[in-house]
Image (cartoon, rainbow, N blue to C red; front, side):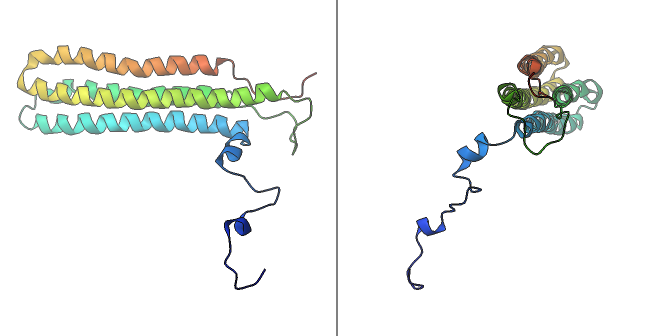
Length: 199
């Protein structure tokens, strides 16, 4: 080809065996250990995001309303505790998942031909989905508890009799995170990383 000829897309395409054809190839060739650890990270990280978001919503309203009604400060801290519970659910799930990641008995560059590959990938994908289940439900739970807690603080400042009524709404919002961790534990129950080749 002439040096002055314009380069085409075909010229820039990598033809080596080490090149990835696209994201589908990257995701399908990723190690199950990678998926498992991403599941742990998403489960913990998204849960903390949900808790922080809820505390931000509740705390700002609580402090603002307490300027005019200082009596609401102490009892409305329960809303902040409910938000923090969503982060605790993420920590619990991360500990459960992290304890399931096991390295092979012998450190080798390539796994043996008689390795339990279906169980290996099942464990990785299962832990990834368990982490996402917990993380995403805890974001929803944290935001809903935060909005309900914000309303509780403002309503309590105006009428103390509304506190218990709105607190019940907060309890139901907090239960969303419990649903996530229950399903996450069930999803990860059968996830066992093989540590030795099949007999």
